[in-house]
Image (cartoon, rainbow over all chains, first blue to last red; front, side):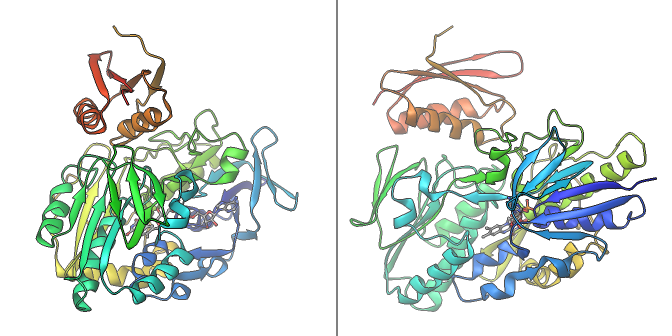
Length: 390
Length: 77
Ligand SMILES: Cc1cc2nc3c(=O)[nH]c(=O)nc-3n(C[C@H](O)[C@H](O)[C@H](O)COP(=O)(O)OP(=O)(O)OC[C@H]3O[C@@H](n4cnc5c(N)ncnc54)[C@H](O)[C@@H]3O)c2cc1C
């Protein structure tokens, strides 16, 4: 019997893990992974690049080295997905046919959507942005820093808050905190979207004298006058501005007519099938799922997608469903971190920061490429506890 | 029931999605336009009311429908 061809677009957390889980079934399935660059970036590490804790090179991994040998890697951007002809068209025009397709093309900040943001604001959400911010921080001698969220959605919802607490630590350690006014801006009326987690950040920010501006929907940035203005009519002056721009899905998704207005793939909450397409799956940041865009969600979704594909290829009705599980280790400054764990049914409980979790987060980064992406250890790992337990 | 110039269906979108969609639509709307928002998040009505107060827009009202709520907001400045 001919092998089923599964093509995965995107060599991120979701795409690589799906490929490696399917590779265990190489007798029935031939797996091809298409990635635009051939390099996997460990994005959570960018959080600490501005502080000089990590060099960006140490966060890059050649995808070939992370993939099971039986997975074929195609290093070239996918330009178009033709769901009628069942093939992916690469930039060179070459066609890659598939029986099943998995879309894991990620989410990207779009600062150009807000007037002046690209020129006026730093970011740590891209490799070059994080490096440039590192240089700006080295020259910083005190003044007004504004950090915040310029618009939804964006990936890793707690990262801007973690960054702010780490920045406070960093300024303290350099005796610059007293000369610095630190303000956090957010589009909504509380510091963090998830209600059970918001108080932890609210307390930490209060203790550290970090001002918070809620209902601040960034309308424009004037980089000459160094002023950021909100739709609600508030203006803030800054010396250093660090903002997270609203994100959009990858270009190929919209170009193929597979995206909604934001370029997100409409995806079934449980089966992870692309709505209206039985042989298409989507996972990770590329989807419109009502879960935090995070590596953890992409990881748990990859397990479901791989299991369902194996079931389908074996002629069974796919049974495995995604329950919305997300798990997040969040830095809270002062050498501590906290863990939140939730799914569609169970919101996270109010977490407690601890030193042990901070150590665990550091170890996770080192273990990540081998233990997590290469998959042997992870199938069904479910990480520590499930939401609602313990 | 109120009439609106534009309806945004944010059902299925999780908090803060519906509020963000409303804010985006208000940014694009003309003065005096009424936007209607459909949401399954019970929090949205309180959030939207608070946001209107802060941003200087008019919160016109809320009505329950089957499994969701309809919220009307008018651009006032
Ligand atoms: C600063 C920061 C901190 C973070 N911290 C955490 C954290 O602590 N915990 C956590 O769980 N998550 C965290 N995240 C989020 C996490 O990195 C992402 O959610 C995760 O990488 C999503 O995985 P993915 O597979 O969906 O997409 P990605 O990992 O983004 O991969 C997408 C891939 O698709 C490829 N691609 C795109 N377009 C094309 C195309 N046309 N053709 C071929 N390939 C294409 C890209 O090259 C890329 O390799 C953080 C993110 C940032 C920026």
